[in-house]
Image (tube, rainbow, N blue to C red; front, side):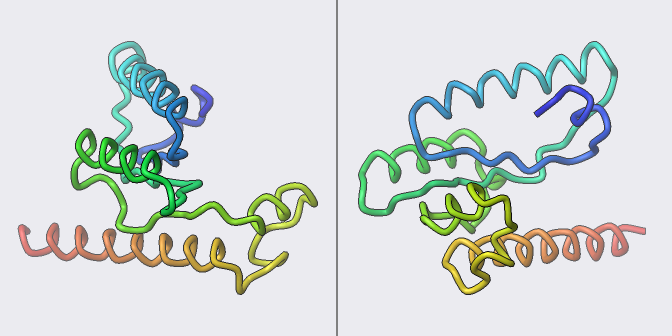
Length: 132
């Protein structure tokens, strides 16, 4: 994520591939978020963390997702995006997945994520209204 995008954002969704080296990149992103907070004076909230490229057949994917949950707790979305060749194909041809193959597993999982995000925003709005 570019620094400008972070400064322009109030909340971010962090996609993280369920591969070891992605965890190293996560550390760098967290350092960047801290720098934005301390040096720019802008707090960027983590709306959620999205495990991607998940392969339920491998122990390493399961272990990494568990590590992500251990670190981020309830910030980890219930939705995970599994590895899906249609995601790769749509990227290669430069066509959004919802046009390339809207019935694919990847498209459904991203739709599930959108619903989860909207549900979370609605619940926070109701909670804020109840406090006032």
